[in-house]
Image (cartoon, rainbow, N blue to C red; front, side, top):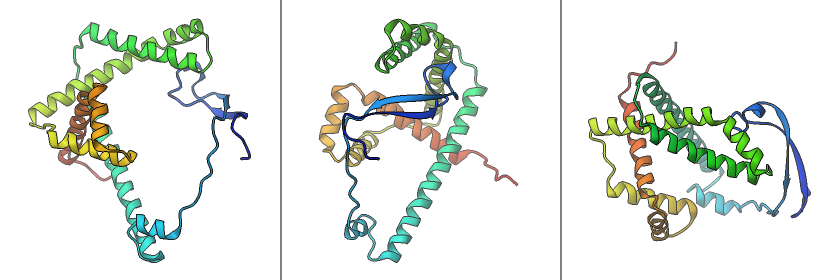
Length: 222
């Protein structure tokens, strides 16, 4: 509060469990940062809020907000169930992975980690040393991610789950809507950056996750 662009600040925090440096995870520390810009938040007018929620008065607005909250809660629970089911499948299937493919994934993660540490102020030598200490963790992550890809594709093939052009077009339109841009520009960006295959894999995983949830024998805890 009260900061201006260019000001430096220090924030006390507990390092998260996914922090790049394993020794620091869960420990207390400080983050030093420089504020690049300051934005003023202007609350929208009541008319804009009513329009956004398709409400006519405060009572209908409260009901609309409540309905969206319930939908968000349901979606979060469905995602939790899907993630747990996929985790169980990954854990229960042993897959012999191509060694070179695993190593390529590890090296890619190591390079990314070095860049992140250098951007955070570490010297390149220290960054490489810290990244090397994370190599085994990188290996575990790479093997798990590759197993997930193979299993998702195997389930999709067996259950004849496919990603159609309509699925891709719909997702590109949704991305454009969330970012307030033209769908054609989003599609061009994904084509130019070679991201359409990655998008297809993400959509296929969603279908597989949904299939697992809707076909699993779920039990409500007593």
